Amino acid sequence: MEATRSPQFLPPKSIITQFDAPNSPPQNPIHQLGFPIPAPPLRLLFWKSLTRTDATNHLYINDRFRPGLMAALTAAERRRVETDFLEVPATMDERIGDNATYKLRLKRTPLRGEMLLQREWKDLAMRNGLVDGDGVAGYGYRNHLGQFCLIFSVVKGE
Image (cartoon, rainbow, N blue to C red; front, side, top):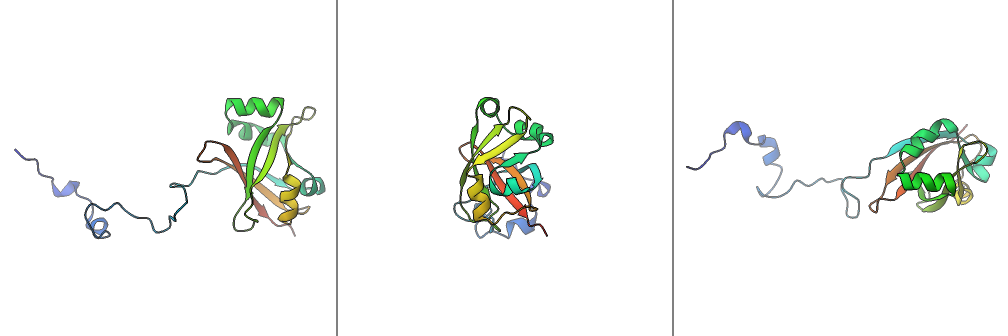
């Protein structure tokens, strides 16, 4: 005896008519070649209004953001941050940035316990015109290799 499908189990007609052939997979027009599908989920890890030192040398991340930032890391990555440093690829938001990847070092300062981003931070700040008073949001995600990465979004100060 052959099983038949009742009409209540068929997809709505509007979905069926969107495709030329009945066996074609749905196509999302916003996905472009080369983009990961789905895009990696971003997680806001910190927000900072830049000081003169932050805009020129390195970025101190307030201790209140440390638990969230450390929670985004694996146990091995956390050990590296606490004992030495973790190399973190970082980019600017594509709408406002220079589309370059920077290699930052994330470490915990021994005296104050704050998190610190350094190494190519100065280049990132200078090439993207960051100045005292700008607001910077740091978003974390894992790339296709499972590596922790950062994307910065900037709100220009007055």
